[in-house]
Image (cartoon, rainbow, N blue to C red; front, side, top):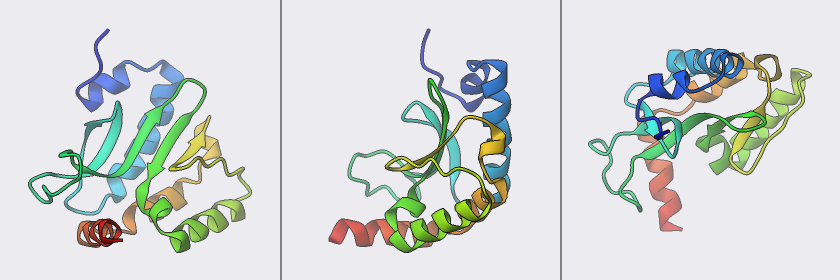
Length: 146
């Protein structure tokens, strides 16, 4: 079976439960995604990127990934690059997540969840909406200069 090249193919390849979970989180992400980012498939998952037409000067020649969504073997993952790149945002996100009473399961660059009920969707919406494309590119460039 070949790797999916579209979001629709990605979703179709999931079992019913995971498809429903990923689709619901995707709906939140798409509804709150700032202007300029584009949805596609990158790194084997649904990704939300800065298009190369907008910012071509990346270290690997691929679009800058702002966020991503994936169904893993035992859980689903939501990658929020700005939350992980900025310690203050990471602390804000973690504190707000804990305040919901839900168990925080964070990896190096992702939030892991098994069911939709594990993820505070209002917080996800706020995190996604929180960084416009110009701010994200500026933060990326500042990080490269370090």
